[in-house]
Image 1 (cartoon, rainbow, N blue to C red):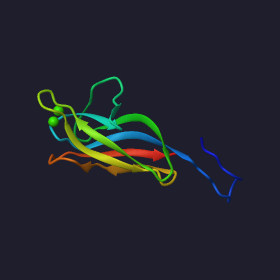
Image 2: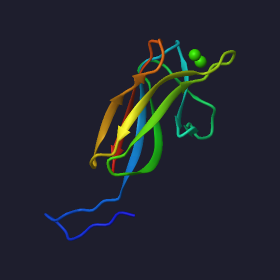
Image 3: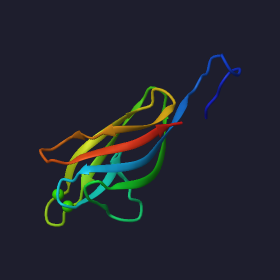
Length: 126
Ligand SMILES: [Ca+2]
Ligand SMILES: [Ca+2]
């Protein structure tokens, strides 16, 4: 729960921020078409009802994922790429920090392998 004292020009005591993930952007796929999914805390958070979402160069996909985070904390969202005959590729991560309310922001993926993939994550703090 958020709590606050007073109104304008007074001190806010916020305990939690809401992190809303809006969309993922594929600037450059790792393969010709990537089969991507997102992990957070060891669990798949997107796509919800499928194994992966196919993405090509220039694609954007809606995420509609929300989580709650203590102010000043950060979360790591991992981007994985599904493969049929070999283990899935861990393409990279997004570090999102809940410093202040604002956005939407777009973070570039921090690479975790030698691939050419470039992705962005569009998100907001509420
Ligand atoms: Ca792959
Ligand atoms: Ca693949």
